[in-house]
Length: 238
Image (spheres, rainbow, N blue to C red):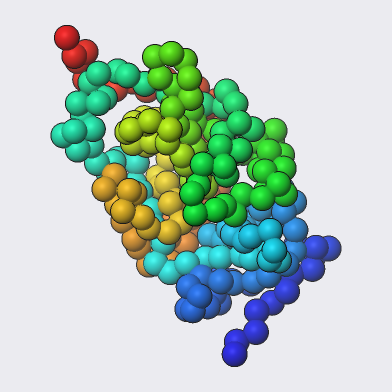
């Protein structure tokens, strides 16, 4: 059995992502902490934490990696009709804490978003690295949301929820187009799902993903102020 490195909280490092296990896919290391510095180092190197309350911190870098290129977001005919109705409004960073709590509580299969994870990403939000994206209905109620990290020209999606039909899809369209306007090159989706694939996401080899990170992670985007100004250009439905 292959032994995994146990990270010391007092030493800030990770093994190369290429050393991750094949089974379970992408498991790289255990232990360490969820300090902002370690989380930033992890994401910059294609690594993310994913664990339950009864486990040590587990660090992953799966192969292949699910990604979405902002310019290639897919809008189906039915989603286009929803967007044309302008039923939803999309914003950013209005209620990060509420979004991350809903990402945790709305998952029927359980969640990895522990209290410690909420606190850690909340600190990254205070530092301007982690962001929330909110979807509001006409009654100004939350219909969906997502949180993730923006580092360089890369956006790392962490979790998403939807309380109304198509709310998360509308979010993805707005976010992808806004990221494209700002010069972001990639949206990391970590592992594939049927929902993400229908939106245009694809899986690529980990080596290709790491190459994209190396090329983009230190490049500043065209805008760092997370004001979502992009709007769906379709006509209003009469």
